[in-house]
Length: 393
Image (tube, rainbow, N blue to C red; front, top):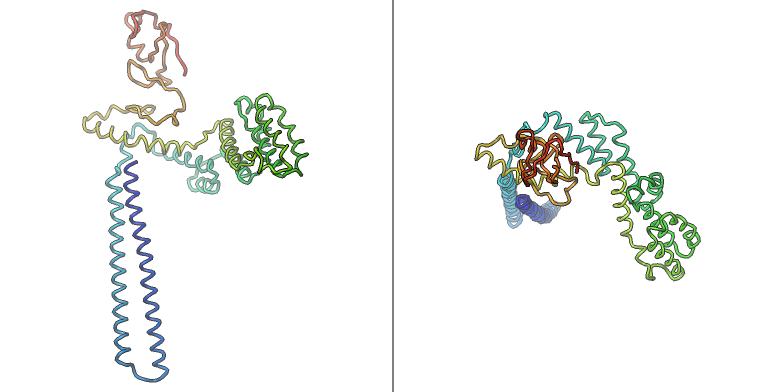
């Protein structure tokens, strides 16, 4: 990230110089126009009177021409200096970034170029749909000739339609969706439907005493959630006492906080994505953020492998040559590395639990078999290799 900050500082300097140059250029030209305007008025007055040009006026005209020439030369010189600043940005990029980033890994690690392009286009397309940029996504489909069926688009279209309604403080579409998916939301221990009903109740409370009867009637929607959200329901019922005085001046004024709308948007996005099997963050944004962390490490690995001439160390598609820490945010599933072979297990090389309780990979187990028997590498217990059980994390 230090490389990005270094380039950003150079860009900021160039932008500041452009801004200063623009202001100075505008001021100089305005002064010239004012001076030329005055001189033109004097010449027009002399022409009307029919008198010849005086020596003084001729001198003023010569000085004006010289001033125009000097100003233009100064502005051109300053503009030339800006070009050198722009070139420094390019040099900073070359100095801080490896132009051959694509060469960090071997081509054999990835699929064909056509497959790469298609995968990248689909990732961009999913990101655009997830961000609600539907028109841009449709344009990409047309220009890239991607064949995307309606089943792929439909979940994103529905989510964006409901989120747009929530941003406009319209709870109707979200409530309708939550009610239709009630059973599955309960299986996820989701409180989305209750929070939507609570927010609708709060909107009625904000209407004052005129909405009191309507709010009491709407409170019946809380009945299915009473055993889980009893305390929150009690707070909302208690707020009815202050409707006559004004809820905003009562101990329950926090119910009117606009942060509830931001919270309901986040809750809906999280629960809806979980229900539909989608990630809350687009795979493209996650991959980009992870790449920013991993790329410097991979570039160092590349340099070491070239220096030691061991280019064949990394040839697998499903694992990196070393572990790269991306942080808890990027932990999506359990990972087990064999303590014997120091390799991450996979579908073709799954973890195996021995009778003694120790876990190794299948490849390690096969290599440790001697005479049809297996001796655990961590304890002296001998056992039959067939007694090992595959573990699924």
